Amino acid sequence: MRRSVFLTILYLAVVTPFFQAHAADNIAARLNTLETELGRQSEIIRQQQQTINSLQQELTEMKTPEVQPARQSAPPLNAGISGLFGASALTNPNISLVLDTFAYTSDLTTDELENRGIPGYTTSGLEQRNGFNLRAAELFLFAPVDPYFNLYAALPVTEEGVELEEVYAVTTALAEGWQVKGGKFKSNFSRLDAQHPHAWDFYDIALPYRALLGDEGLGGEKGVQLTWLPAWPIYTQFGAEVFQGENDLLFGADAGSGPHACSLFVKSSVDTTDNSTLYFGPSVLFGKTRNSTVVAGAEFDGDSALYGLEAVWKWKPTNSQKVTLQSEYLYLDQDGTLTDAETAQADALCRRQDGFYVQGIYQWQRWRFGVRYDMLELFADSFERAGQEQDMGATPWRATGAIEHNLSEFTRIRLQYNHDRSSRDDRGNDEAILQFLYGIGAHAGHSF
Image 1 (cartoon, one colour):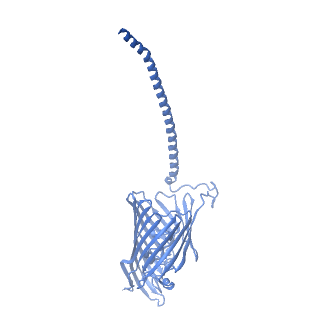
Image 2: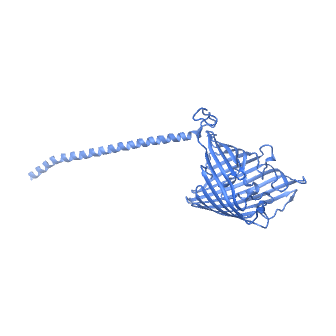
Image 3: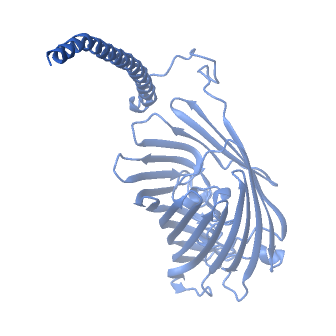
């Protein structure tokens, strides 16, 4: 018994220090491993902090021009590579070309198309002819001029020659929210009016525009535009424009010796859901008018105001699908004198006319399907000459269907059918258009 106790005590006395030493070695090894891992993690954190600091510095440099005051001292004229006036040359301009060509067929003859106006609105007929047509090869140029201006130009080339449709400068360094545009440009009176024909959802412009402004809307006008985009929770832009007023249908170059047309507009945009947006706003065009395009053989001289209300709703549930609904209402208020060219008899003319269009586009991958209905004289139908209401005939309207395929970002093929009853006679115009659009170069993206 005593011997067993003695052996046990001896065993513990010999073995215990060995296990304690082994345990101590394990703890030391673990500590060494943890210290090594901690050092590695510290190095990673240090590198990531350097990356964060670098990115913050880049972001600060990018934001710096936006918070600088509107009026800044100009850079030295001898800074950098010499430009046009001795200043630094920034970049080469972006240049692009868009070809718009189409094949057209109608059940009307060439003479009938040329004389197919809209009585009470315009005496101008249709320019397209049966067979192959070239609308334009439109050249676009854009480049920053310096830190304070960007310069844009659009030059459509047709079979008649080269037209200077747009050329204007836009400020880039005014106080936040303010911008000035000057030169010759398409008015922002409405979304449709500001677009070039190749950006339309259909081959032709909506019927109210053709009746009240012309085949391409107001067109390029010489003038100046001022817009303000306040920092509000809801996107809201206010704008005002002053034009020379050379549009043949609404104003006329001879209506005044200087600028005689103006526009005011408000544009707003709100998200209706996580994947849909509503864009809307009122506008007005007003000024002096003198033209001979409303009544054949007579000249009108007076005042005109065109009121507009537009709305665009876009829904994009997936990257391969999109639905766009768009509508606009136009109302014309015009008063003045209509003078007969042969007899020189002057009669008072009072017009209260309106029109609207509604269209829908469904996009599935590279295919787009569209329908449109447009009509004049929805609520207002008054054409008084010398106090007598004139009966112009049936209500003008048109129905349109289109299907298009975008082979790539640079090629679009569109097939469109119109049933047109705008000439107020008993005969409609059934027309089909096969349109081809090709674009090359760096073309700026279109607005929402």
